[in-house]
Image 1 (tube, chains in turn brown, cyan):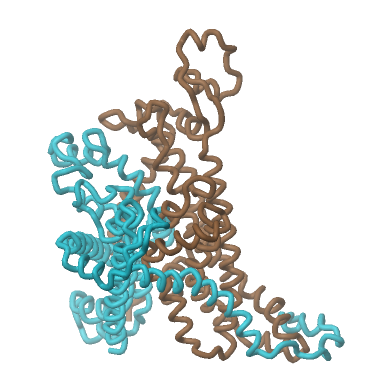
Image 2 (image 1 turned 120 degrees about the horizontal axis):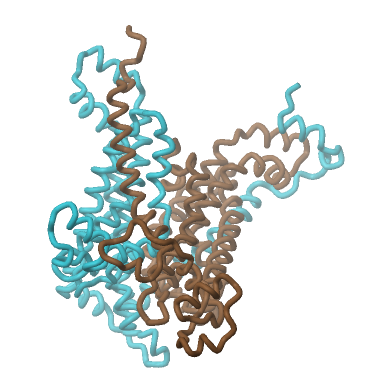
Length: 314
Length: 315
């Protein structure tokens, strides 16, 4: 037989494949690069035709995103003391005065609170039940597992109506607690299925050794199983976090102000004139999407598992 | 010296604990561990589902909580099923489902097949390609409306540049029949990597010796592709289609932000129509019935599909 295996692709085939795939990658990332570049454009540059690839970068979009501004006439500006902070100067140059922070910071914070809160809860509940499903003879085990999975198939709008009514009567409408509970429930199916897969892979021997040494079940779970499942728990947590971070349907139907997350808020960002402020929207999108890109790169080894609920592992 | 966790634990365990009672029996622990999850899922999924079923037989309107609620029997259901608009929306949904799945399977499988040639740096490129599907569909959908802007949008510019069709002669999200394809394009852009990842797993699961045996039998590459690669990757491909099918049947965020169902009703997917009925027109009873019909449809189709999938797997 020749030196190379018959199943490996030839050099030429590899080159062709590589070029085609890189081409696709470039094409598919262009819209994202366009979002990022728009966030550094001035208002007129962002909507000029033909679209500008090269432009004078400005932080106007970011300043507009985080502040509320009022238009001031040239005479008014002349009577005021010149701006000191760099962001004041940017607004000043457009004939605007910054009058306070915008609501974006608050919405972003809501996304963080609800995302981390629900992730924490789904991981705690998910790890406990995944361990039980993995190690104990739970009655109706397979039915329960299927039930847990099937809750994910439910279209959000189907349960949104009664949840809306339920939240209204429990006083949970537009609260962080309500959204955390809701996202926890939505993420639990993913958490249980993924974590069960990870815990199934941990050999039982260590736990059994610990049990023989006199550990209680619970101690063995905390001191032996949890440390070994750490990687699995971490990647499951990132999946839950990304889901909660990205969720829109429940957020737009059940929140309006206090607990509103960033996804329903971003499309409503308007300029002082009343039109959509595209550089500010792009800035919001950039800030909102960037953490997910970082997490995706961290997760790359477990991506497949996460998106298929553990059905496909490698 | 080997120092396994078990060794460490053995050394660290004080005899007092070792002699202690074993704690709660496993059965009790199992229930304590599982109960919160089941309880929460019952409270947030099953209880609302039962409530929706109940509401679907009434004329309740959530914006008038004090109005008298009347039982109307199956009238909501008969009205929905005999309404021509419902069937038009189902067709819009089917158009969206079929074409997104078609393009995603085609491009996703092709990409996976190319990546599986294991050229240098394929891991890095795969990670980059995957990024769109991890992003927030609402934010992405909102931003695509910017790319799709009439007259000055980047997409219009690129189309004019490549084909010479004047950029101001068509509108991707406006009237003219393009909108239903525009949403297919964005969904395909976003979710092709999903199908690709699953197909890649399928292709990697095919052991080399099968190809080696085919090589010995002098089967052509073309024949190998159709008799080995495709059939062995098929269960994975079908799984990807199942996931995409369920997801796109309940599609809401991406399309709401792109078109909101418009222009007119051109992209009015069933779930967007449902949202309008439930949260804009406040016909709670009617939309509950609608929700149940959609739920039964997706559940029924998924069950039939899973049966077919299992049959393919057993072959």
